[in-house]
Image (cartoon, rainbow, N blue to C red; front, top):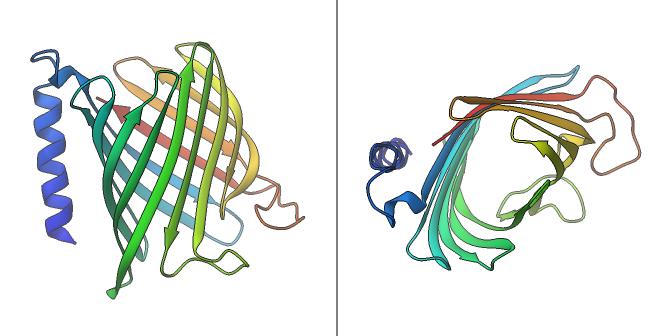
Length: 203
């Protein structure tokens, strides 16, 4: 796992250092984010990062990793740019605790037209969570963007929940996010003390 993190960080720093060199390299983007899911029962810290590089207008490569208390995952895949939206299909690994390494796959769809940003991610694993679709995890987002500094809308994430979200961005510096998810993702249950807060940096 440490080797995977090391290689990702090296690639990430290399992409960032060369972000302004040539038209092809300018198609490279990356991000890092620290997030916490907060509920009356626990505070779950999450560290994640990703990068995307387009070889031309239509086809690119993406990589993503995430780590939390007893969970790590990393995957990479192909990105297809279809003018108004992007589709990414990825495959990689997951690790629970100190062992139990298994496969993980992901599909995401994203559109970023003026004033609207829609992003949906579905992951499938060999472990999963309790439920009829226990191998699936999802994160669905709908955001309105009245300016480059502010976005707001809704998020539905398993197992965080569903509710409103707001994102504040200081361009070329840092971004902040807040999600209030009082509605349980998989059952009719209200918990007004369920939140997610995050800080991110894009390159």
